[in-house]
Image (cartoon, rainbow, N blue to C red; front, side, top):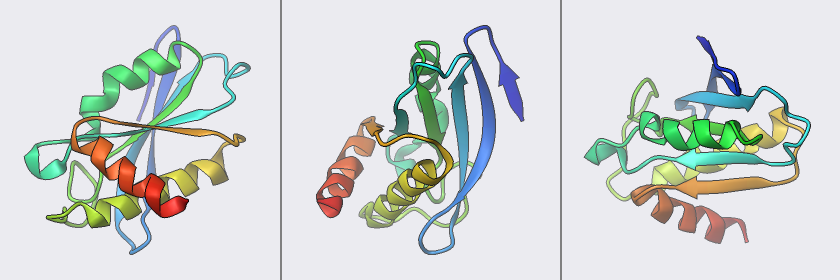
Length: 132
């Protein structure tokens, strides 16, 4: 699936998490990537409470229309992603790390900006803490 607008394009991707869970993702690319020196990874609110990557679409569109590549994804058990959501969010931390590793492999960037909404912010705190 691909979507085009005047300032960005959107495409779908799948990303494998550390334990084999397949995550459904979207890539929002600016029409001109010449100024994009980093990629934003957006983490949605807790899936058990209805969170999904669609809730991050507006932010992703806004970023990409300003020249930033943005990646959204459904954590395990949300949307079209496989697996089940964890009660503590611990498995979702691995999902975020897997997406960041995928971004690092698939894009020419040394900088990944993590943006979370609601419980997505809490998950990011654990991701940042585990990587230092």
